[in-house]
Length: 227
Image (tube, rainbow, N blue to C red):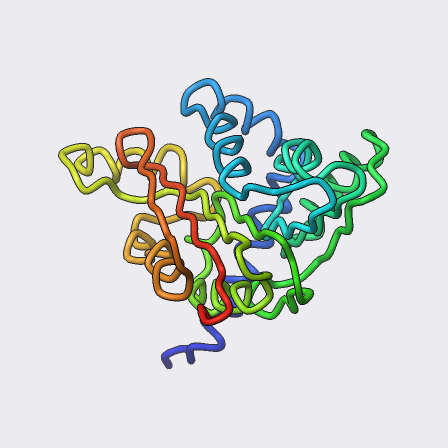
């Protein structure tokens, strides 16, 4: 008997939760290794800078994981600003809470929610998602929902992985097996192009390809007639 779309999606969510529950305690050390080999931290910094946040702004960090973006976002919005960290997995958010408590940040809200059903607060100044949206089949709906919550002139930024449109695409299966599959990503997800939804719903969009085209930063700006 074949599974319905809803059953398949539910199974995928459970699989993602199970994977990241196992990885939660080791995610930050693993991220440091990725920083060395793939400049992952530098790309996070570039993505946060692309938000063009100001002191006092409110930003949503969607699929925030253990909160690796929080320190960069704190520098951007200041203690007078607000960070809303959203993630599906309880164990990852527990690590994010520990990070917040250790740093003494009082302006971070932690929310456990599915990105697809998350109710964005109205009037936010920025939305960012790093290395996550490609995992979500309904990424287009997520981006539209976020677009509708952005204030005019504010930005949606995605940092994620893709298959290069050059000769390096030959290495995609190997890299996927070695570095992406442990975190639930599959090469079949390469057909998902969240940057196209950024281009569809927002204005003044840009797409920057990094690391030979395996990484990208997509940026879109909200205008009153965008969504």
